[in-house]
Length: 257
Image (cartoon, rainbow, N blue to C red; front, side, top):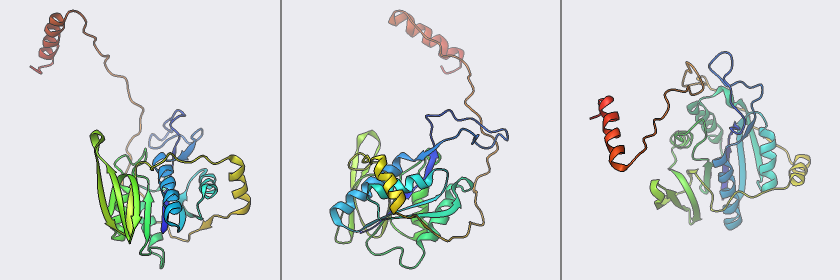
């Protein structure tokens, strides 16, 4: 199988996020980045498919802080090739990112009949999960999102898709295809730091030659700000009958009833 995993760096929300002085971006002075969690699951799912069916796993990422460490970690886990696209992720909107990736995969020989493209189903700055379907549309490939299990055989993939309320459904798509991975069949594997350092010494990261898009951002940000405290919650206590009367009074006060 020809397996591609699309990796994206996102701000580490364990650290406090602050708005920069321009009011339109995050303050990068103390900003730390990490691999988006669904992308980590996408990598694990690709490695599981490789172990079952053979093939190669190629990890692809746009340029971003600390991305080299993540690419070497992916190689240490079992990836076969790492490619960095030297276009800054920070300057792209989701649609523009999909366009850059589509240009990368449009190269001759990139997409073969047994190809699966495995991006994460969403990211903290792409909660609607638009990257994967936009990429699939640009490449004219079938797409299934919120995937939590993949099996492949005879040029097809059988996919387990998760829905709200704990429901799941099984789909079958012909390859090549794009699958937005929500979670892998197993938790992402741990790789020792020593193995990552060994990969840094023995492996290389390929660089793709692509021109930046003409329209890097599809959305103009007018203002970023932290949530502002408004009114406080009013706790209603007492016997059930008294609570009911108080609730009616509150609802009537706000013209709800």
